[in-house]
Length: 81
Image 1 (cartoon, rainbow, N blue to C red):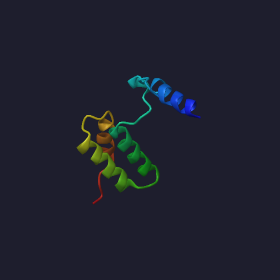
Image 2 (image 1 turned 90 degrees about the vertical axis):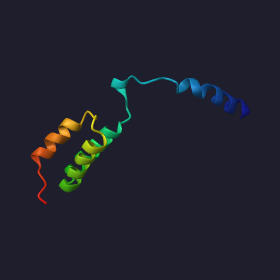
Image 3 (image 1 turned 90 degrees about the horizontal axis):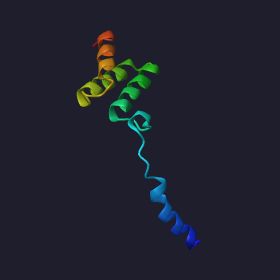
């Protein structure tokens, strides 16, 4: 049992050390996550929530790759307040 524990301790760093290239990344950036949340809210009929998430994306993460899509969406879906 102790040998297995020691083997796990010594092998784990070598098993987890690889770096995923950015074009194959599996983790969302904050901008990706917020844009995905906005889309999910919209797909469930929550347009006010989608609008708030899109605006939050623009305010909080102005360099996100999704900002242009958020600007277009907001222009096409003006608030009815």
